[in-house]
Length: 421
Image (tube, rainbow, N blue to C red; front, side, top):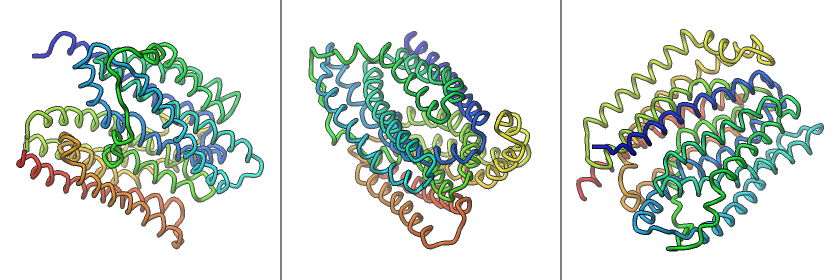
């Protein structure tokens, strides 16, 4: 039986998650109306993809999978916990992430090769690195907040962050262009940090919490965010043609990914919670069927109602009728790949319900196969004559099928490992 606090926590988390999904979707509509499919915005998306990829690996759900259980146990055993060591190591990792982001992003600035905006993109690269670093730092303390059991506070903090950045998005983007997107994001971060995280920085009394590099399981973090990584890598490839193709890919994915984040991930969370308690083959099969049916439904809806939906959502301001036509065509071409992504997202859940020490070896093997597939495709594209659009479709379909096959393997390993425990 759930306690009253647990019920309230669930309702608050569900409500704020819904609000954040709406806010996130509204942000994309605002950006479409201001920038449409302009080449400047296309190059901005290409450059931002690198920091977005790092964010998927080192922030949010990926970081939560590695750290939440550690801090939950710590706060369950001690009334007071000192976070001074966590603060220090987090700042060092922040600096490392910033340096790595510049080493990756500055070559992309060179690749973009826009003489009129070179200094602009160098400045954007620096701000993107700063945002990535701050995002990692704040994510660590947000996870600690969850570890303390302050789920409502965590929900409010992350919602305030998104709300404040969205409030300033339109005026800042209108007056400052793509730089305004980054400035509005910084306002969201600083508001959240000042109001919710700042008191945690001063927690220096009690049992010392130790944070080490080995606490971060890169393979699990990679597999746990494979769907977003596939989308981001494919988005990056879509932007390598020195044209605005990446904008149509981005708008297509915003619509296609809405079902993944709104339905599939919530189902996955429930499945993960159930499987962590008891093995349930029937539940695995049901989640697989639901993912398959939702994927097929998505393909059907995009094929029949895609034009109306995209026109209704995006076509205003700088987003023209031709942009709608191009986005619909891309969405239809991409839609089937999401069936594989949905299935893989569902079937990976049993594997992630196991303790990390039990799945470390298998995670390393699957992550290596996944990364090798990405590298092999990127090398292949260097010697092919495919357009950036064709390459992005090859990338997303190949990686989504690979991830689905790996998810089948993960279920097999889950059954074997569970039978040995």
